Image 1 (cartoon, one colour):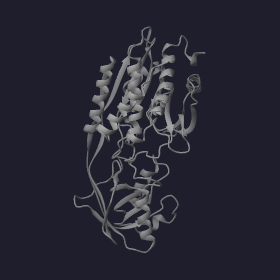
Image 2: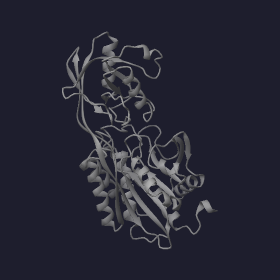
Image 3: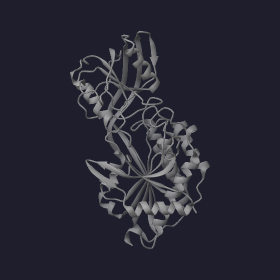
Image 4: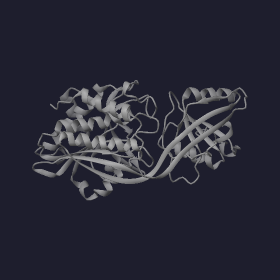
Length: 416
């Protein structure tokens, strides 16, 4: 059995989340993370390499929300990635609320120069962008999303949207307070300030390789993304996954597998259109994809604080209208490996949005390891104190054992 260390897993998470903190792609913090990964690969004796790529960047400088009427006060807020920006002095406007999902008369409302308060969409990957685009076209001067529950959360808008308005996120509690003031008939006036730098930036993919001794052209990939969202320490999303990759590199470094094992830390997973590092990888290594036996991707494996508290495999995805599925042999192989180790791993039909998607789209067997579910997702409360290293260890052990068995199998399961 692989000797996985909870202590080392925790040390990685603590360093990434507490020492580096939010690891926004294209910033110094992401560069520090990349250097940390390289240093650990080298420390463990794993051959490390770096590939860089350029993407549209968004570097937030200052974000403020101030209520001017009926009572002056400040509200904590987070900018959305690729938000529109305000003048240095900010944008002042009357606050109104809108229900983009159900208001059939929305297109007839006069939103010109208004700052619009709207509940965060249920489908964060699609309707944040759609909501922002729709309200911008209706003349809104700014947009305030408030969470359905808990703290403010950060998501990504479309960097290629031609009409972008300043867009921020606030907590559920603050949003409800503003709604109550509007419902009471008060005139609410706010000042919104979003200052950010927009430019092309450099991001990183870091690979570590343990070369196979007899079937070296065939490989198993263990991966995780190294970036986090704005204002979030990213302890679970995704320091937990990156910790798993680093710990498996350490444990396997002195072993001699038949097939190559590649450990990859992908950059820029969080910004739209998502998975930018893994897309770069599959495009650059397109001729090598046929030799990848499987991709085992870790994303958010350290928290399970809601009712649905269980270790899962995300086995489906959709991209460009194409439904993608993990191959049955791989799903069953992982579940059986979990049983042999004493763990029940649950396959989910719920869509998985992470770095396995570009591989699935290119017909490479791939799956996402995810511990469900996380109440601090994409928020400032995604802290190391909320992480359970036992959960990370479980997923690391199951995925690592799966990878090791595949790397050494005389005959691969999909060939039987």
